[in-house]
Image 1 (cartoon, rainbow, N blue to C red):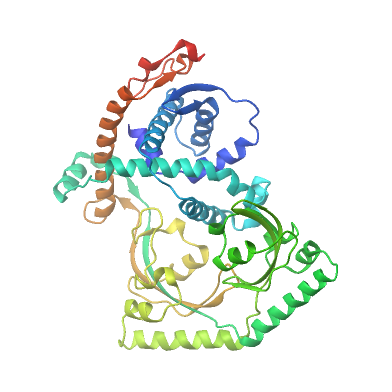
Image 2 (cartoon, rainbow, N blue to C red; image 1 turned 90 degrees about the vertical axis):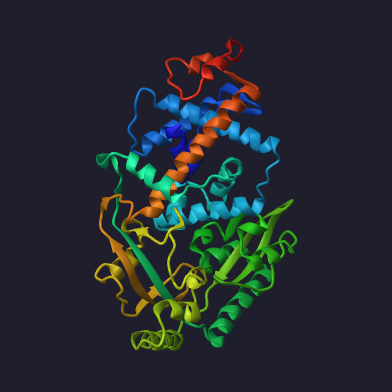
Length: 456
């Protein structure tokens, strides 16, 4: 189950994204098996195999069989999750989808670039991802149910580490532990009024007969939707800002909303169509213009905070908890968290280029000068960054990488539990597989016993 552990327990954004593109090319698909109430298709197997190939993994004669076994294992988990009535909410799906999209957009550089790569809008990409992510979260939930009681003791972690030959210990990339304090520039009342005044003008022009879509193309500061006349596509409440969603769901077709304020700026919306709990709207976004006074105020506040830290009145952690405007890191004392393993160590390769430049020349424990920032959504301000810790590339060691070793030891123990469950579940679940796709395969489990000529 080594391959399955790697592939199923760690959800691959690339695999799902690859399947999004592949789905457009499918005309007919072929059912090659049934697991409980779940069908297994040739397309699923080929899509996962192609994404594995694209990822640069070493491909062997048995790789396609390993992928098939992964799919079968996933179907077993999905079927059991439905039998046990495990629940995954729409909000969970939307949150996970948005997290993955943010990551992918960061890799490509912008929403516009992502839309260019896939040849469709963000909302269309979301629609294609939704079902796959729902099933993915169901599978993860089932795994969590089965392995919730798994724990490892320090002795087990050490025993696991000592079983790994020295030359087989994984290489750990250079990593850093970073904390930051952010102060956003306040937006003046005059700037807000100016933005709202423009939107009132646009709304009046629409009421006098001009097309909302034309004004969106010309004036909206949401460039991703502006090129489509402001249209964002069908969305649910959980997919948009709360204020935006509340306004959208009150509208009738063709109606224009009052001005709506979100963290991105000010909007007016026009409803195109509503289908149940999803709406398709156009919007025009205007961001209040940042002025020099607001920027200077933010810089001055951060300068005073830096003085308190430098003179020893507050530690960096205390100052972050008290003063930072970054809600995500405030409770951690400004510490940034690695989203992949929830640790505080972040691979250097994963850092935003601007942040990399800030910490590259810092020593451990050193705080940066004040750095200006510009964040998505039009926010501007300044930040202080502290390099807490830096590690160079190295072979994994029990002392330096205890949490990583512990995670690996726990994953191995979880796989033993999952393997035992799978062996039992295979005997209690209706399974039929096309023998054509089992030929010459080396499986971890005895799937050959379910070969059935009638599936051909």
